Length: 113
Image 1: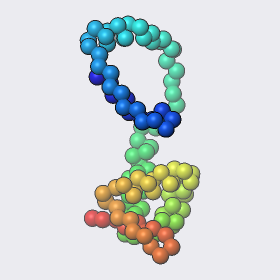
Image 2 (image 1 turned 90 degrees about the horizontal axis):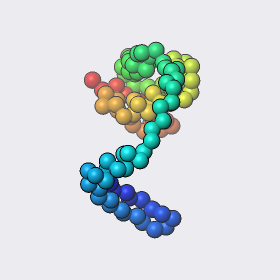
Image 3 (image 1 turned 60 degrees about the horizontal axis):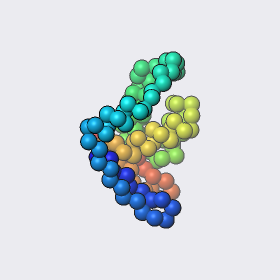
Image 4 (image 1 turned 60 degrees about the vertical axis):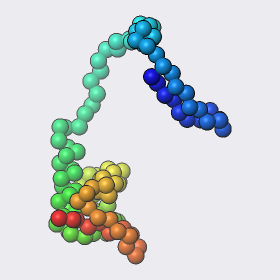
């Protein structure tokens, strides 16, 4: 069974399609998968993201509490990128070990033990 929900223009769509095993087999037989030559994709070194994440947590743990702009500045220096620093801030916001409260001018990040 396949269920499709969404909209088509302004109209709501809720469509359920039921297929038996024979239908799935015929559908699969009609799909042609071309085998493209494997192209190696550039990857980061194995534990680079994990190392950055641990360093980020250590920064906040040692500070205890730090403002968002100050933390972002430190993360930008650590990663060399504003975008990477912001991604780490978002990850901190969702961590169970971090509490974020609204300060007077900016959020305050606090480490929770």
